[in-house]
Length: 192
Ligand SMILES: [Fe+2]
Picture 1 (cartoon, rainbow, N blue to C red):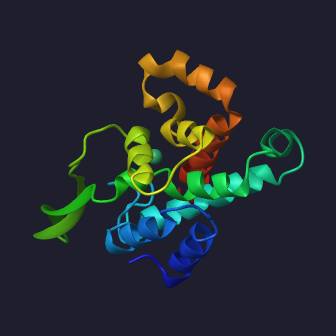
Picture 2: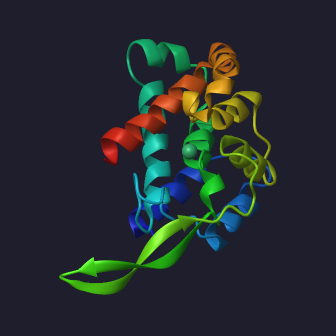
């Protein structure tokens, strides 16, 4: 289970979003494995509560960009705080009901022992960012900008075939690039 502090921070911020369906979305999250899931199987946040911690990190990075002096502050000044919250906290909601644990043999001090490890079991193979958009929109409506930013949060990692489309999305909504950066900063700096 994610730490109590992280759960409170997540819920406090999400409940600031005044949109029809937000209570039902909150209820879905509480009942799901969102608070206990890892953020990945073995890279960043591969521990219980890793997904929750990662989601908060991305939100805080994005919030920091909006209120920073200079380039990002100017670029994101008209992006509503609600959008920063929704995109940051929910970009990886596709990872709920996504990981499972299996046992694997590992040699510890010369003896074979069964240890648990995370593995992927994708029951809704709809894509990564795409799936997050779909899941959020089952509960609340997203603005076009939020939709794009969640869809494209993986940036160029979405796949080489997507590069020119991604470039157009970045031009249309700088929040797409800001979200990708916030995600990378969380993964490779805060969670390394
Ligand atoms: Fe992601």
